[in-house]
Image (cartoon, rainbow, N blue to C red; front, side):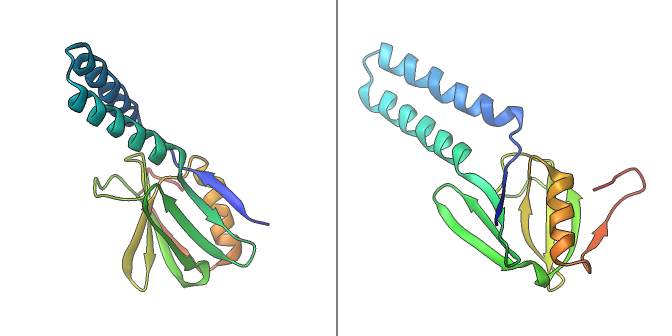
Length: 141
């Protein structure tokens, strides 16, 4: 059985969706078909990414990371060395800045932001009890 975790979504992502809709409405109200079309397209792309950003842990111990039009990434959970909470604002398959860094082969493999972080971490540890959880004193995963 596989377990699916949707990405957390920060307020700023909803602001982007709202801005795209407002720009579409304003440009279309001024008879700017191309501008309105572009804003509607941006809204639809953002909406598609919102609906298709998730993480799957399969029954055979594979972590799959999916995000919209971007290529699906996967790795065996047995190859994950550590996980760590982060606020790094790099591009990632994540719709939140509250993220988890997944370390593989002593390199940052991916930044993810599962909605139910504790269940996500617990399931990773179930498949690979050797995963090191890197935390600060006031931070728990």
